Length: 218
Image (tube, rainbow, N blue to C red; front, side, top):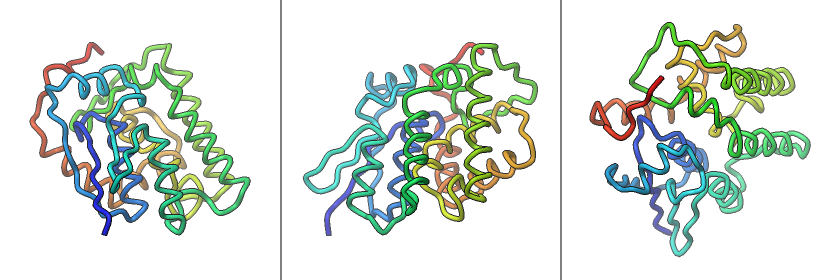
């Protein structure tokens, strides 16, 4: 059996590691986690610069090494075509790739203003004006996908790459008490109650309470 390892950083703070980890779980890949030392400069870069273009998460599968979250998604889709990482329908599949790519390359203000922190709760958090268009765009994407495909996940009854890409946003919306209409709140609960998300969250809660390099001015 081909050995697989996924290199990740903080489960509490690292949205890109979460995305890669969820994709591996969805694909049914048997893999070992390899956490990086959080004092490592590369790990801090991945967390502080909020970029998908560094080497964490990194999937090692036999002789193959894949980094960048969407590259991991495409590799897993090719390797495990029956896992259903993308919708079967061509039109839905194109939409799934589009909204996943939009998250991958955009929403910088949202990520900066509402950093992922699964342990935190801010009941009266004020979102600065620059991040509000990002929040509204996420809501619009979710509403369109749920209305078109019926939920409870973005593309129907089963999770896809899009759900892995937006799962960290669901945690952010909970952490910062972002107001959501009923259908969007239900989607957030679907993601947060999803078994892989609960497993990841348990790991996040078990991490040390503070990483000095990640103190954020809100």
